[in-house]
Image (tube, rainbow, N blue to C red; front, side, top):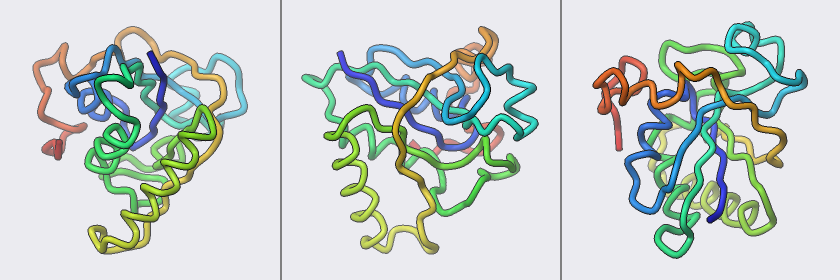
Length: 162
């Protein structure tokens, strides 16, 4: 098993995109990239902790590659929006790839450059690539939020793109 961590706006819909992907063993939403230990949802939403809403993806690299996970990431959000996705605004909704090792850093950088050069996005990509730090699981009611509510094809009120 391997681990990948992505932030792409509201974590509910992003988790659903990864949860539905063959080769993904499990997903968990939470907070990472900030400066406060054990933050709560309310604290992260304040924008004062520096954390991003993120999804931890446990996957089988024999079944799905890290590059394939990156493809899901790029499709699950608009990486040209700085510190926001749709109606959600703030640094907690930033686009980020939290890398766990040198292989992920290299592949994430290559994928970012390929997407920039492809012309697929009308504006410059603002996704950050940074070292994975401590991941704090979100409260239970956030886990698999979309699936629990029968909204598996919606990303926080907007039609899903996966």
